[in-house]
Length: 453
Image (cartoon, rainbow, N blue to C red):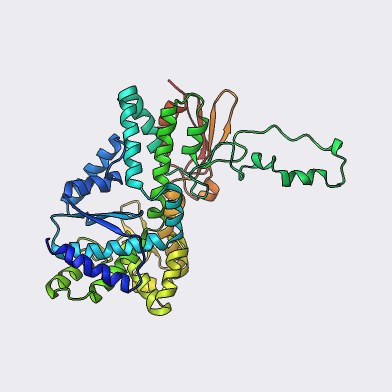
């Protein structure tokens, strides 16, 4: 391991020579336990909550069964921060260094990552630690039961953000809200233009409703409109929301990002100067294990390995279109554009991709090998941050809140039992009745409701 720094310097020199662009990466060797905790919590220091402990146990079981192994955790920023496991072999960590530099280049180029970093700031680790400190202060001032109830609700809604809107916006200052646009001086000019009706004959505008249009950013809406929430509770909701904005590009670009990093670690290992042959062979063996289409020696996989799919797509794009075209794709697209525009039938057949269906008896059969069906099967779980589209649609004068599931555009049903549990969490902080309009498995209208105890 004393030689890792020497090899890392050589790899970085090759990366710069080949045109990888990033602000810098701080590497740190850490114990395996620290790495697992960081991977589960998402950040080295984060607000405490029981759900992270559940995730840790699940990760530990998977690792002990040989189904999951963490090689690195990397955080985009200025500079990026990367953790390597100190008990991994030298060859494995040499590969990880090259892999991380691919991630750093991707996050520096990709517009979605850059937008997120511009809004959330490039010092995510320091910001997360500050938020965790505020939660610790709340625990001291308000007790574990109250703080946990707020975090239960916030983390149950952590993916219900609207990443198309700014991270920082006030409830009255968003020009995209139709109600605010009515006050726009430019739009007011249209009220004085001649028309078929005299101004006096026009109908009076309907009273403004709250919200004036559906709000899919539930964390933002509850934090700003919760009728009885205290400031520390609103701060907790906004803290979870800010972290979700940071994590979204990682979720939305997983295939692109892991594939890009895998393409570059393979290329850097080939082209780095004076890498000993035994280190190279061992590192390439690890590369083959990472980008294989299936895990644990199985000949069939029912889930896509993002490393394998992304690596195969980028390798083909570079071969057929050139590196500069690949970099343009890297900058402009997310997984939706990447898969729909660059995964074709020929490549899908070569990778043996298919859509499967499960029978009532537990049997598995191939349902389709059509490229459009394959693309949608890959992308469907990634739509809307992986959660159903639910919006706040009405705030009554008594503080009652109505939520609506946009099942038509969503194309997915709700797990009604889980939705009921989430409503129970939400009503604890909203402290007024909350109703959710959705449909059941047969498409019949359903209204779930919760009232404060």
